[in-house]
Image (cartoon, rainbow over all chains, first blue to last red; front, side, top):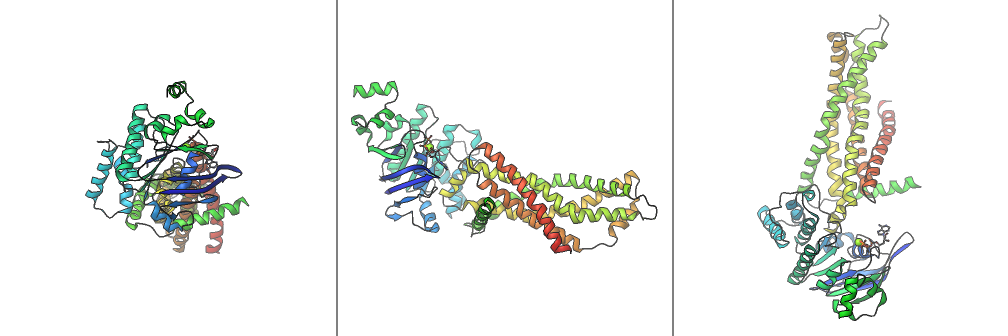
Length: 250
Length: 246
Ligand SMILES: Nc1ncnc2c1ncn2[C@@H]1O[C@H](COP(=O)(O)OP(=O)(O)OP(=O)(O)O)[C@@H](O)[C@H]1O
Ligand SMILES: [Mg+2]
């Protein structure tokens, strides 16, 4: 379980996160939703320590991550997999080396074992025969999937995905969403996903946290969304005519 | 105050760079890669520039010697000393700052703005050390070799141009480059080269590592890397010359 308690974060005099309290449980997909600029990425990066928070505390299964020494943090980071908004694949390495990278750095496996694990992860994200291509040579959707495969390589306990399906067609987006959910359940990971894609919310939103202007505005499951009276949430989720119709039908 | 801020942050970065590596084997492999990218790939430009500068120095020196009582072998001596004392270390340093420095800053800067550095950090890797240490070590190993190549080729260029233009005979030139030769000059040039190598690699890496924004900022970081490396090289050239030659 990951817990964020009273998180505040500012850049200069710009307050981005204001008193965020969240808990994320293993074995379910936790979504953070909110408008562009609402602070989703900053929250995710704060949770993993890429941003230092100004106030509050973050705990990984009871371990106080915020006050931890640099070295202890490193040990927790080895249990974290992260998919960045832009994929963040290493452009100078081919796909195989990208996925193998964490294995090279942190295991003493033989090359055959590492290759086997790499191919397993790539297969898991439905990518085959791309091992020797470079990130620039594959499509955006494929890059996202490679990024997921890389995040999976070390069997993380905690998985963070920043808009894993933004910029993808609806079908590919659903494939990726389902993949994230499958591995979450299979490995009982604590998974936190940033998204502003309503299909994702409906597809995999076991728990949904709505961030509005840097505050936690609402939380619940995807089913609760339909019954919620929260104005900002409704304005955000049911922004399109299609979804307005859907809500009425319900 | 800005200067102190940068100095402090630079010192902090260097402390991270020189902390204990996670897997020495992987660092060694990275260093070998960097030796090729930063070192071997610079041989061409050093060859060309050294040859022509050597040639030009010889012709200019010859042109300046009009007095028939000055022996012509001094042309060889003059070329040798200019090349050894200043050109092979300082000018080659300035040229490498342009080529290698911008390469380092743009590579690391791009990795920063595309979150590749965050990706390294999140894996629990010391990104500063992983990315920068191999570049510094490769530069420290290879730049002295480049300096040495530059000395040989520069003196050779002077010979070729001098003989071809008929301003000095081959024998006179070869006598000149051996005359009153002070081996310490080689050491002096190599010490400067080592210092400049460290400056180029570390200052450029610093500029890249703290890039914030997008492609435009990467470009700016790369320009700053070259400018600051150049200024520091010239400043340290003066300082080291004071210390080592007087
Ligand atoms: N390093 C930074 N320095 C200063 N301000 C920042 C920084 N990072 C983010 N911000 C600001 O914090 C706010 C929240 O940004 P954030 O990237 O978290 O938005 P987001 O919800 O992820 O948006 P999107 O859906 O577009 O990715 C923005 O107003 C942004 O300008
Ligand atoms: Mg974002």
